[in-house]
Length: 201
Image 1 (tube, rainbow, N blue to C red):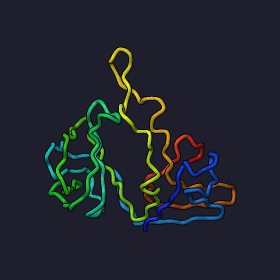
Image 2 (tube, rainbow, N blue to C red):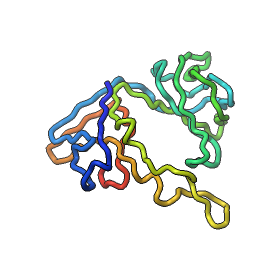
Image 3 (cartoon, one colour):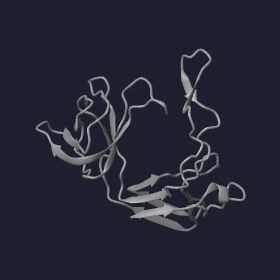
């Protein structure tokens, strides 16, 4: 089930807009429970090389073909202009001869190496859920994402997020507020959510 919420920041006379604008405003109770996937995140069981369509993970979860996962970077730097986190889609899963280690077949090859040694390993997390609450594709993402994506300090040694960028995001939101209000959600994916610089969104 996918719930898509619509609305433009430019259409709001003033911010913050009322709770119900591009949101679900719960004043009584809400229950939303999707299929349970466990665990929802794990780690690599071995280094995954660039070009590989298989990764080995330290658990055997009940993830499904077609679901999205993320394999995190193991590089020293991770920024908007330079990152090696990869969002992938599961082709299939297989149990290996080693108890507790499963193989995940990906629909396309990895672009980068993801380290999985004895001392640390890249994390692998399930992104997909079968209940999705999302902002609309057209008006949710920031519109002020112009180059450069990061700024450089005066010594040219390090980068940092540029000021006054990525401030116009106007995604969906869910508010469960009040002493008599009850919210229970599990197995729910939130996508294109959050309203930048609006408190409580």
